[in-house]
Image (tube, rainbow, N blue to C red; front, top):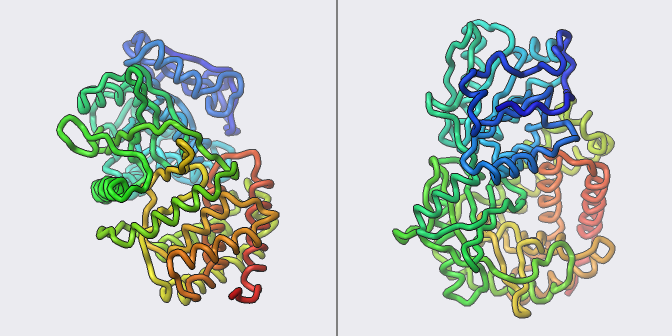
Length: 500
């Protein structure tokens, strides 16, 4: 069945066929008549405003639970991680991506879109993290060498996540697909429900998407009167996923044994902490009924006390997580430098371009910190994302959640994240200094660790900035201004005299 949305497009193809773009010719008669396969078409469906795509996908899954939803797109909008993830989470598990040409320069000329090719490639890189079907169909016939070049570029990324693209001929045009001859993927929400029922022997009555900022797919499941959190682990590379899942499971068990309030993992019927869904780990957690703090909503003392308890207990935990702050900082620095070199990104993010000179100076300062300061500070296991959004108040006590971002680094870095989340900007220096004093006293941290707070704040702010540059948002200027105002605060804190 073809769902033809109102025509709109972000390309400017010289031979544009208008509202017949991306339809009919390549869809077989059999598929068009299949009442459980829905093709969403209409110029570029991801930018039209008349029909919200996530709502449409969720409605289709609700009405036809075992349906396949195929989105036909040029892929450019999916270069924003949040857009790609939201559509997959809602139920779109098949993407047909149309390139004008497999050569970057020729593609951008034919589509009338500067950097359009790179945007589409970024979109495919996002999509290949997930257990979904992706097919790439160039409009123009290309030679074998060009096809191989694109195929190698795609597989360099895809193979890190256990996927692989292959090439085949269809009506004299080359298709690239990651399906390996398999049937197109069913929608993920319904497939996950069946997988949970099979692996956990739990009847799921309802599954609702829950937003999160990383690549993982999160759902809230209802089973009778019980609620469960479901996480599909798509953030990490395939080679690390098993180790990361095992680390998180052991860490959560350790914290519960040490009376640190957090959620518990629900094991499968075979007593395993997770199961694989098409090579991707899925974890179930108990649902903690309580008040999610959100950003700067009070209860700072309760959450701070829980953070202190976490860091006191974690010293006795014998496992080592994957990754460390120095490695992550170098990666963020490289990303920031690439942003400043990419004209299309600066054009799309004018607020960054306005601060280009200042950002260069900040990057150089952070490079110096990662090379000279960080190696001298003792590492511990960090929560890695201890924002207010990852705290819940239940029966007057704070519970700390979401340990998937744990890595090695100075304990003060967790405090930096905590302070940025809980303390309003206008009071930041005074209140964060007070918390820093308490944190160092409780954990018996050195003066060198304490003095690193402003530099670690700069590192965290750069991470925040690079993440926001990769997202699709209408508040770029406001968000960027806030980050650079916080950079100014970090500079002021660097020049403050040491407190006794």
